[in-house]
Amino acid sequence: MKKYIILFLVIVFGFEVGFSQDEDSQKQKKVKDRPITTMFDNGMLIDDQTSVIPAQKSLEMVIQHRFGLIKDNGIKDLFGIYAPSANTRMGLNYSILDNLMVGYGITRKNMYSDFQVKWAFLRQTRKNTIPVTVAAYANMAVDGRNESSFGDDYEFANRFSYFTQLIVGRKFNDWFSMELTASFAHYNAVKADVPNVKGYDHDVFGFGGHARFKFTPQTSFVISYTQPVYIEALSENYETLNVYNANFSFGVEIATATHSFQIFAGTANGIIPQDIYMFNTSDWTEGEFRIGFNITRLWEF
Image (cartoon, rainbow, N blue to C red; front, top):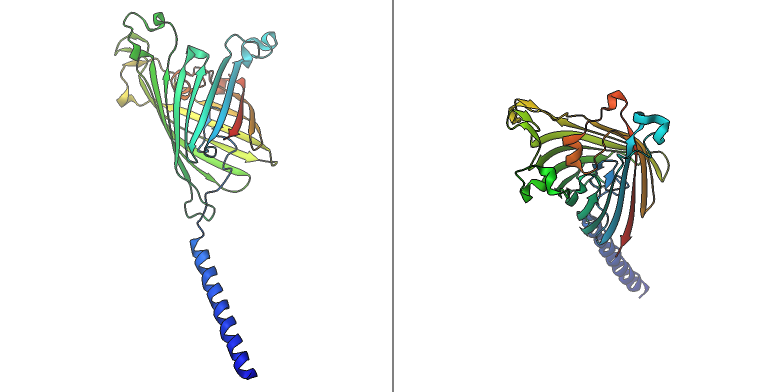
């Protein structure tokens, strides 16, 4: 009788062990390779967009400020801090999905109102099934200055400008992330001394990149570089007034789960990207830097 009981227990427990092992193997097969986290601590790095989008239903407040050129007056205006050429942008962004964000902002320079969207359609995963993150960013800005700023042939469409950008990045480890960008900017109306002979081009292409070096859990060194490119075959003028200066910036970011503060030295006075690519007249190789800062605050609903 004992033999039958032992045999019965062996069969029952053997079946349960085999079933649980089979169930565990099925669970392992179902585990997905999840996207990485904190490639960057913010959706914005100095003057550039990153591929990062806050979690779904997050509202983000953004304050961006640029002081005047450091070398213009030196100590007289506290190295640009009290310069009249300071520029500020305030904005709000909302994450519709974990990988889709929309936003609005208004900038002091030209009273730009900008409407933006960012979509991270490919995201780097923890097991490197997908090795990079790829995002698309676009905005439309409306110049809010008086009609007289647009000359005699004023039309409302003259106020519009556009910017699109492709962002490709990778988080290499816990302390280093990097992204490269390709961009296109367009203004419906630009100034011209002699139309189609000497003036600004309406369009400009560009490339760039930015990186983060994290040296404490909350603090990072950040760097950004963007370069507009002159393409003669696409130019509308025999002599173009566009300067095509690069925008080079570097600084420090201090970030928590809901706050980020970036302080840096950078070249451009503009804040919205099409203004930076089209109208940056400062040259970093000549030491033409200005102090700036960005502040962001997140709320989750």
